[in-house]
Amino acid sequence: MTTLRWILPLIVAGLSHTAWGYGEIDRLTGSTVVASGELEQVHCPVGGKYDCLTWPHDLYKFSMQNICFTANVSCGFSCEGFIAQKNQVQTLYVLGSRLDSSTINLYKCPSMY
Image 1 (cartoon, rainbow, N blue to C red):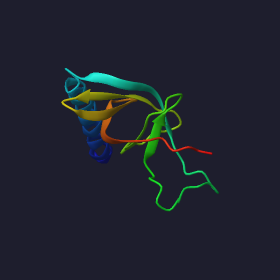
Image 2 (cartoon, one colour):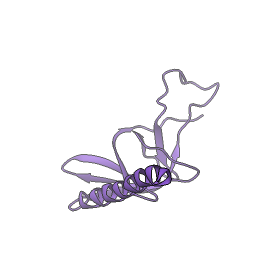
Image 3 (tube, one colour):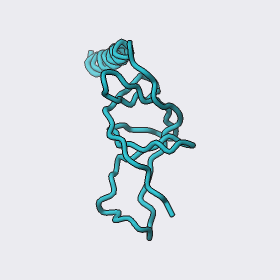
Image 4 (tube, rainbow, N blue to C red):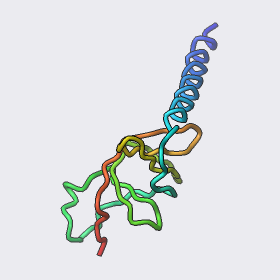
């Protein structure tokens, strides 16, 4: 009985994440994909011309593209996604075991040199 008490909440949590991911897919209808690719976090260059104390900790870009943005996402070793626009609102969708999303703020990518 004690095993069931801790397994049941895990099953419910897993199912709710799956259902939430399908809800994200439904919101894509009518959206336009603006950019896509592998995400990489942009770190403050040490000894550079930027103040690393005010550098945004959630600054990302698509590799091989000059599109930078802040987003509330968590990526593991590798992370892929796309930016979709609908009704003038841009949203980042991160692909993984489930579809995750975050509103974004676009930034001019900083020169790293």
